Length: 251
Ligand SMILES: Nc1ncnc2c1ncn2[C@@H]1O[C@H](COP(=O)(O)OP(=O)(O)OP(=O)(O)O)[C@@H](O)[C@H]1O
Image (cartoon, rainbow, N blue to C red; front, top):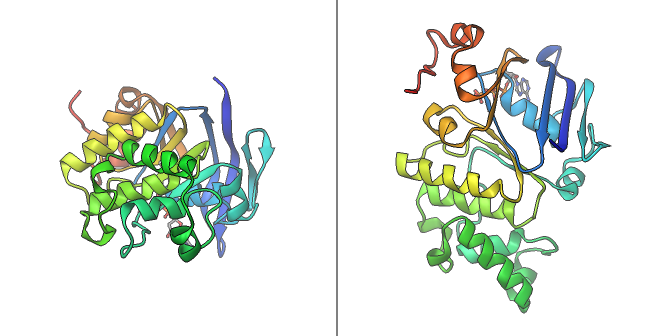
């Protein structure tokens, strides 16, 4: 497969504490990679290091064969790596449509973006994003009156609006109802038609819904990698999860 993101021997330290101790990760074009692991395993730190938010002490990150290790976050975002954080980071007082508009490439501030005449191309782009996140009917709704799950979808839409090649999602289903979680899984699967997606997730039912390849992190290292079945049957993974979180999803 055509690898577009490659993380090699990545090490991240916080005041002497090694949060990542040499992690490798390969992501192919339009692939979904799911990262699981107990609390504190280093999952968010890995995404932070990829987007230039956590300083890399050793190893490197390559994107489309370019070394992007420790490049500034805005530069990495501009190159084509989009990141959605755990908590929705949306403009509550604006409509769904306006939030997506603001996220489009080339938008210049809230006032200028909202008052400027909308080109047909921009309108089409926003409409296509709204369709992909299932919020076409809520285009004119203020984000403050949406459910928590819908707000998460708006934020996914804001990432999509930037046309990234790779999308990194940190626990996209946190706080969602089972129905919203399932819908999110379908949105992510559809996203992989155009983008590679790396997802951190705890909910194994959801992981099973979306996963093509799973990477298990534990104490800053890669513990296992493979399909849902391979990972669930891996004795090292079972041992790490024993007495903590259950990963015994019905086959
Ligand atoms: N900015 C920071 N300063 C100091 N320590 C940090 C910082 N960020 C993360 N850590 C530590 O690094 C380790 C890995 O944290 P990280 O948030 O990456 O884990 P995680 O696997 O995402 O966990 P969770 O599932 O709880 O979100 C933890 O021990 C955490 O306390």
